[in-house]
Image 1 (cartoon, rainbow, N blue to C red):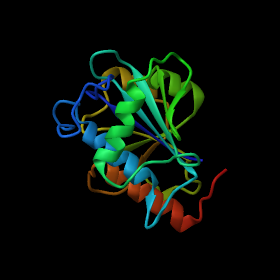
Image 2 (image 1 turned 60 degrees about the horizontal axis):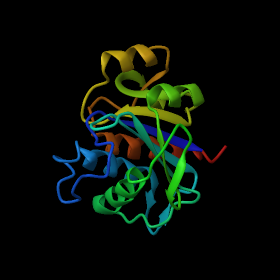
Image 3 (image 1 turned 180 degrees about the horizontal axis):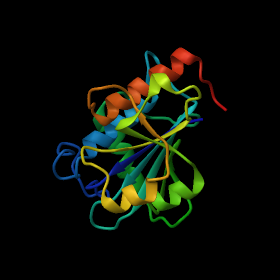
Image 4 (image 1 turned 120 degrees about the horizontal axis):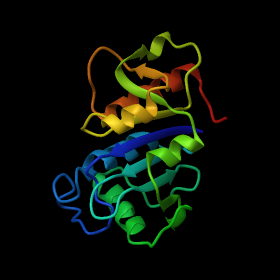
Length: 192
């Protein structure tokens, strides 16, 4: 399974935001929606062997994690509003430390990065890391940040993880996911 974990530093943790104002009122939820779309969309199909975790750290009730699973995902269209609507529905559910399904393939739980790191060992996508083309065995899980850098506490939690770069230029988070998936496709990386 190909996994992408995206930290949304200001992303709202309730469904009280307008789909017309995801950059502002939702705490840059638009960035996270683009990451969801980049994780799954192919021409006329979805990647069924991918998962995208959104770690929401904004007000009013952080942290929460939304999980999109490609093998069961339904109702996602290739626009930000579609992903935003599925996130709103997930955030409307009461949740605890176990994932709860809101719509097919979309889950929500209470908890954040620390919990995810106890469950998997992602590489960090960072411009200072080893170039992805120089890595012999590609990781299957990747951690990246939204439009903000990792916080000091996040950096401390992840300092032991492998760092991977997608090239010399700093890219948007969703574009970085696309480049990683392209490299996996070129190497024939399939579900594990």
